[in-house]
Image (cartoon, rainbow, N blue to C red):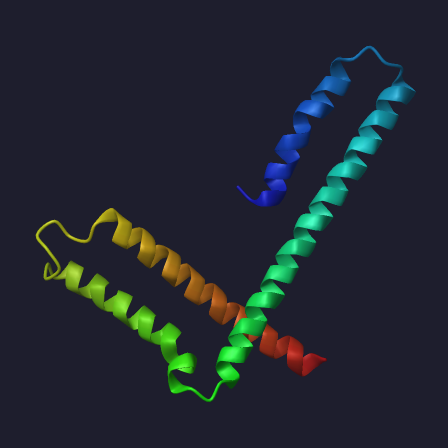
Length: 132
């Protein structure tokens, strides 16, 4: 569930409450309109925070790419290759008889998602930078 959908579910009980109150049509419409305005404002703030987060991530990745240190530039690919090696070893049964523990798979999922997301942000940041 996305955060914007979650925000919509938060406001649903208030909308239902307005429907249950004994109000005139004008009062009900006014209350619902105000509630929608508040919901839109909350969603705008969430979108603004998410865009600021993405901008911050892009700045970090850009700083890493500009670094003179070989390790700073290549630590992400090295981690992903190590995790990929764990997956291959687990597939061939080299890691252990029970396979990788569930926590290891969660860590791999998070790392791969972060790496792919980071690479996407890096590419978008490069495109935005060249277009401005």
